Image (cartoon, rainbow, N blue to C red; front, side, top):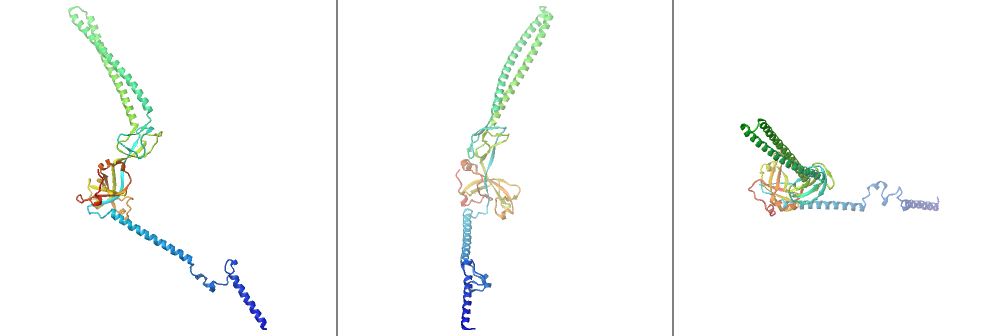
Length: 386
């Protein structure tokens, strides 16, 4: 082969190699062609390329966020423990505690008779006094019956007066018949009066006595009718009064269940009120502590809403049988034990001046003296003034 032909073949081979490399890297192709590797690496090493820089940076950011969240949680737990220690410091051996919720007795204001609500004089949240009118039922039918009974009373009264007059008349007739009989009885022995007249006077006297007895019976009957109609009037007055719903004692209206115009059956509920004079908290103590608690033992209640004010209370109930701790106690170890329910009632003198502040459902902690000689810690000595 001549030298010129050899040079020509080498040039053709070089151009072909150059065109192949250019085609493998042509951006218009959308991707590298097979047969070439980036950065001159062999094809079998493509799967071992390093993670891109952006992906590594995103992983570092996520790790930093997780670490920051853990630090915040740890700080919050530490702060919560610090606050708990401040609010609930170490207690002496003669004091037991339990958590619960402040409760007040609920009183249902119900209808005694079926009827329609005519008027409402209270609403939810109102403080009411004992005897205060809360609602009135429609009593038009009872008022009509009352007027009828009152008219019957008037008629019965006239009947009694008539019977009294008739009785007096019969008494007069009896007196006359007795006098005529006595005169005849005095004249017959002397021959101035016949035996026949004597018999007539005797019959007249007997008739007057019978009429007097009948008049007395009619008077009794009239008096009984008068009493019956009078009792009907009293009954209707009582029913009308019972259709006026009043507060049995001082408290706060918690719910208004019915509205004006609603027809309720006998016993239909209109209001639910809280008895602000009986406020208590039920707590649960283990056997060891509950066995030392006595009726009337002093107690203190700290509410979460007022953690610096110790509310005076006394133990008024101790369960006679143990039971499981209720779900409101969230400590797993405590739920596994049998506990005794203890009720502590807030001092009535404190409630009397703070009825407007009484609220049901507030969570808190009750502290009970299991040893009467144990003094209250400083944080339980600040009680509200009576």
